[in-house]
Image (cartoon, rainbow, N blue to C red; front, side):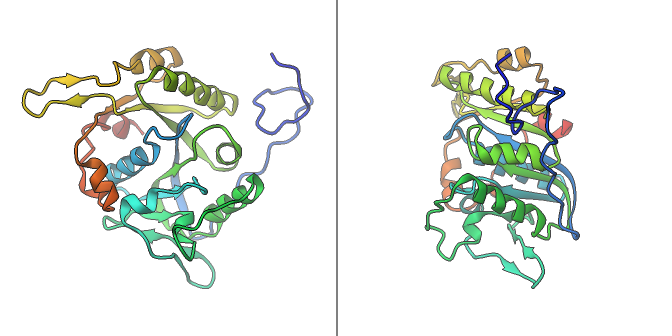
Length: 271
């Protein structure tokens, strides 16, 4: 065990010197959110926002009321993959989320900026304040499942999500490379420190399936998805292959037209 630095924020130890944890954010009075699922990764570029969008769309296809809180304040990509570009509005009391073609409610920093290409150059405490506004000032209505697309790593915003939102659990996104597998363990350990359950593990770009013969080709080498999941005690896993045309759909804001349900069937049925 490492030596105590008397800073309880982010520490999972239950010692006698522990100070009280930060208060949970209070949901908007008009919001009833039954399940909050965090989508996390230990590093950027593994397809976390893609998995968030596909999971949300797949759940919506099952007739559930779904929303996405884009917690990647400085690098939001959720609006683009859903084709959302207009600024969100207010009814004078609450922020009204944007709504996708299928009816998924979305809030993101890009939907609050005068120009979606403007950079957000803010420090951690300000980012945490925006996250609190997204939770408390947005009228989410009734939501069966909210997916929180987190920024990569284990910094201020992921820590705020873990501490201040009522997470049912998280889903970790990875890719087959050995380095990324190592980074997954960091996300796993953070979840353990914060006492947040890991609900599933998704390996993106797992393989390419030949359209002619159906054979799977592991272009980046076969991943260690099952081994990592078994070692960490994670029962639910999913492999998302490299699908020609999917990136193009995301660029055009048409992610909802892609049927990903078969790839996430086990996870979706057990959330």
